[in-house]
Amino acid sequence: MYAMWGLQVALCTLSVLSLSSGGESKARSCSEVRQAYNAKGFSLVNVPHQEISEFFLELLDNSEKSLNSMFTRTYGKLYMQNLEVFQDLFTELKRYYTGGNVNLEEMLNDFWSRLLERMFQLLNSQYHFTDDYLECVSKYTDQLKPFGDVPRKLKAQVTRAFIAARTFVQGLMVGREVANRVAKVNVVPACVRALTKMLYCPYCRGMPGLKPCPNYCHNVMRGCLANQADLDAEWNFFIDAMLLVADRLEGPFNIEAVIQPIDIKISEAIMTMQENSMQVSAKVFQGCGQPKPLGIGRSARGISDMFSVRFRPYAPEERPTTAAGTSLDRLRVVWRTMQESVIDIKEKLKESKRFWSNLPDDICAKGKFTESDEEQCWNSHTKGRYFPEVVKEGLTNQVNNPEVEVDITRPDTLIRQQIMALRVMTNKLKNAYNGNDIYFPDSSDEGSSSGSGSGCSDGCTTEFVFVGTEAPVIRADRSDERAAAAGKSPSRGPSIMLLMATLTLPLWASQTQWR
Image (tube, rainbow, N blue to C red):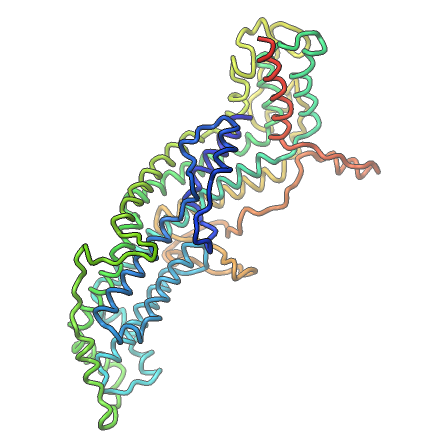
């Protein structure tokens, strides 16, 4: 039982990076959580005192505020008149990160096209441009490269960093959800009987302090946890994929290195457009036709002059802060902490490999739950050595389990659903490692079953379209079905966590008393 609790605590610790609920300006206290963990005997080292804000969203907010302050100061009214172009960029980046169905490549292409249209009008303000003409202008974005190489580089950096960050966060949530669901799987009556016999029959023989023999315990627990053990292969693939993406977050897909200077990069692109405005305009006029000049007295030459103001970078001490007074320096401290957290997460992920197949071994470890002296233990009948062979883990290997009768032809449906959820998430993580994205459903677009994320046009392949881990809780105990068919009232079995807690805690208490 403690092994299962340990995994859930580890996954809960990992999920500090998961998507926050949003909408709450004040961080909630974690005092109740700390009390609960302390009561269960867990260390409070990794349990925060307050809810942790999500770093990536704060980084985006700070970058947007920095750009807004910089461009307001540099371009003034002209920037304010075109503010929605930049606001939409950050809105879409946030929507993507929080699970929205946003194609990053298309969104970034659209941003540069819109910016080109706006700047082209301002730099050629003596002409009148129709919507059709501006649409023609936008078609020259790739050919003319008016913003230099900034759009191409920024698109590559943004897509890789955001795909890695969002997929990693979703992976943490999927792992936690799988563990939570598996912990609630109900057990078959045969397991209840086997556990009761192992833990309480010594009481009936007048040996209440006698612990089970290790091999006897192994057979009981491998029978009870047969379906859970089948998670192991897919769980290990999932952990390996998470570790690969974590390496990306530490290195080339570092999201801070992309988001923090995004305002500088956009400004550089605007400067390049200003410097090349005459050549760009001439080629556009050649391809789209000569536009009509504005009427006499309506020339807006002053706007062009005003817009040609050169960008002056902020000195470090002038950099703007967030609304909460959070400076970039503090964000860098937060980011260093998050990098340390990624390292810590990697260690916890490594520790969780083979968790499900090792769970019976962890429970039945000698000297804890079982008796270390194999001659002085409960062997299912009396005190003495346990002679039957220990079966291997997994459902199919329980056909000859001497302690638990397991129907190997009826795999647990909920466990199979979690295996599928892990398989889908692993596939996403592998694609994210290569900089490719897979469609994430948008909560605002329920029912949509089509769409592709950025990068999939370059050969991104996947067998699945992931639609979440939500699934009906289907009981492992099919006795209800048989009882219903026989006209009897079905009886509900306990979850594996509840069963182990109710059966083992009194036993541990009695062992402490008898020492």
